[in-house]
Length: 214
Ligand code: SAH
View 1 (cartoon, protein in one colour):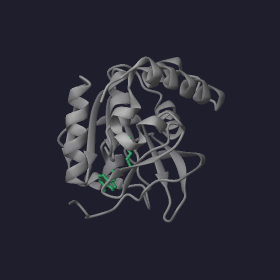
View 2 (tube, rainbow, N blue to C red):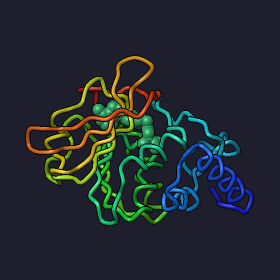
View 3 (cartoon, rainbow, N blue to C red):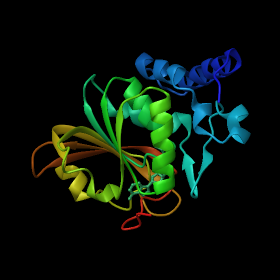
């Protein structure tokens, strides 16, 4: 797959759309310019890669809407050098957006096929991210604590293990809900025993599945 002026032009239009929809962080918008989304899609979808749509990425999974990726990223309020845990690597697009923003990314995917594919593309684009194959509910205790945690699949509840792996003052962005829709939540860890939870609207994700690593 190649980048081209045409794709670059399409990216600029997508960025204008994201800006109009309320994404104001220029660093995030610049990251959308730097990461070619069409590389993450099957060649049959490449022409539509910069429309604000989700697509199938294999194994019954989808790459999130660009707006959803931008919105979750904005809620994370990233600082350069933050240690960030992502649950649901999927295509690796969100992983690369995070890496482009200068944070240390750790990402977990439960589908072996997607994990292997994402590894190739992350490396090909020259990003450094630690990808793991496994169950996101468990997090990555070896690398904890994290400054931020982002969940990119719909969780039926907020997993306690992931809260435990957040630093005090750390933030988790997680879509919570069973069924077709989830409420986007921002969970701030106030102390070892207290969290503050805020809500940011309804989104639609593939489910975060438990004990289904394959
Ligand atoms: N961030 C991705 C979004 C992919 S969709 C992207 O930018 O493309 C969500 C992903 O979460 C799917 O690939 C799905 O397989 C994965 N997933 C679901 N439950 C999981 C779990 N318990 N642990 C790890 N990954 C999980």
